[in-house]
Structures are given as structure tokens and as C-alpha cells.
Length: 376
Ligand SMILES: *Cc1c(COP(=O)(O)O)cnc(C)c1O
View 1 (cartoon, protein in one colour):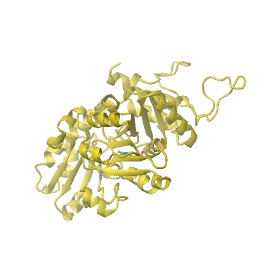
View 2 (cartoon, rainbow, N blue to C red; view 1 turned 45 degrees about the vertical axis):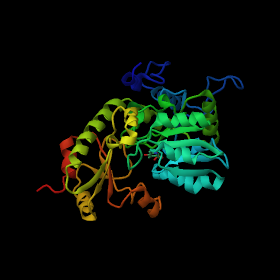
View 3 (cartoon, rainbow, N blue to C red; view 1 turned 180 degrees about the vertical axis):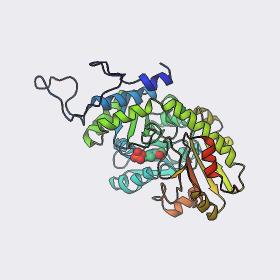
View 4 (tube, rainbow, N blue to C red; view 1 turned 135 degrees about the horizontal axis):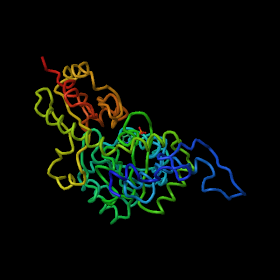
């Protein structure tokens, strides 16, 4: 099946008992057993639930992986993957990963003895330089949030295989419609399904896909032991969202492309960040994306323009999060990335006048009208 069919019919298609075209919401915690240990494959819903299993199988199909897992949030998914490691292990991270990822590593996993370096992974040399004897994994986001740095996943996977490291990719920004990290050599793909996969800003969820049975068994053991699973209703809602992933992403990309080109010609805009503007070093990596996504960041020339912009919004909502059908705008330094110390933020280039726009699927004229702060 090709991708546009897979989003609708992948995983578990409908319900074999009733013919329901949608997977039912199995709102149950436990399952009857005929005899001790004799059951229909389900014992307790932390271990397995048919609705959750449907979304888990679906994301595994979409990412072309071996097995998928659904968690109560993106952070629960990321934390569960981190539990593959132990005290004294070292991991190399992209330096402008999602703020919550930085926080959970730097404030929580550090206390359990996890060692780490945050480096600019868009330059492969920075990865090679930081590999130590105790390095166990490379964890990247591409493109990154909010500065849209692009890392060549295939190149990194070669280094990972050579040094026997796991390659973990947070694919939230791209979704499997635009980028398939496992096909490029990644071992584990992560999602905040709260964003594009859910797509409607109505649920919080996380997904993990692994490329092997061994990793599948390990992640299932962690998921069942730690227990941050996605409930049946939210699993169903996520399946519903994923069905329209392709057409939503096409529209997000189309609108984003028009806005980027409009922003580039505005006097009050200092710099526009979008993955299609990657520097020559990463030209090849551009091809790992089918299109460049719906996320744009831009720096305005001063705080007055920022104020003016935020007070000019009718269609666009000032809010955290991204990936929904509605356009959302945020100021990373004060919102999503506030947990990164200001000095570190400055180093990374996340200035106080940097704006992040999650381009929705509204009419482009209405979105641009909100952005057009100098119009008469
Ligand atoms: C939002 C986000 C997360 C965290 O996911 P939650 O669902 O909010 O827990 C992780 N990575 C990226 C890239 C995100 O945008």
C-alpha cells in the first residue's frame, strides 16, 4: 500500500468482530480469561489495549519500522526511550532540541548518572569529535526547533553503525509523510503526536517506532514497567487525526512556502529560518525531506515590531504547541524554550525577537493579513 492509503488503512483497519469501519474504543482496563493464562491476547490495558495497539501498528507501518508504541505524551515517549540507557552511559544530542527534551535530560536523567553533550549535529564533525568510550547513542532532531538546522540523517547513521551506537530521531516536525528516518538508517523514531500526527490541537500523545525485534521487546518492557501509556480514547482520536495526515501536510507546506517568500521581502523582518534555506554544507540533507514542512521561524528587527505583530492577530493564535490545523505563533525565548538558560539561548541564536510560526491550513490571505503589520 502506498502512503496516502496507508494513513487510512494501515495498522488495524476497522473491527473484524462487527465490521465497523473504524477501530472501536476499547474502554477497558482488564480482560476475562477462560482459564488461568488462557485469553484472547490481552490481560491488562497497561500491557496491551486493542485501540492503542491499532495506533501502534499504524505508526509502525507509516514509519516503515518493526514495531510502534503509544505513550501519554511526547515527553513520556522520550523519557521511556532514555530508560534504555543506564548510569554512566553518554549520549550526543542536537543542541537546539525541543526545550522539554533538554530539560528532562539536564534536570532529571542527569540525576540518574546519564552523561551527555549537546552539539550542533548539522555539522557531522561535531558528532565525531564528541564520541567517547561510553557513548551509546546519538539523538537528533532534523530540522531543529526553532532554528531549522538540518542534520544529514543518513550520514549520522553511518557513524552510528560504525561505532555501534543507537541513532534516535525526533521526527515530530516532519512526520513520516515528509521524512522517514528508519529508511535513512535510524534505529528509533520518536514523535510528539500532539503536533502534526494528531493535527487538531485536541490531544497530547507520544509515539515511538523501532527498527528491530530486540528494541521492540526492550521498549515494550519499559512501556509496561513504567506505565506512561496512551489511553483508549486518545488512541482512537490519534488514529482519526492520522487519516488526514497527507492532505493536511500538503496544505501546511503550501501555505508555509508562500509565507516564507512573503516574509523574505518584508522590511521589518531581519531573518527567516526555513529548512529550504539550509547552507551549502547540508545541501544533500535537503533531499531527505519530501517538502520542507509547516514550521517557520523569523527574527523581527526590534521589540516594537514584535509588539505590533502580536497585537495584529485575528486568525493566528498566540499559543505554545504546533502542528494543528490552526495557525499558532509563539516567542520561543519566553515560551517553548524558556527552560533553556538565557546565556545558552543566546549562544544558540534564540533571541528575544525570534518568532516561531506554525502555519495552519486557513486561507493564505488571512494568515498574511495578520502578519502584514505595516499595511495601511
Ligand atoms: C512538543 C514536542 C515534544 C514534546 O511532546 P509533548 O507531546 O508535548 O510531550 C518533543 N519534541 C518535539 C520536537 C516537540 O515539538
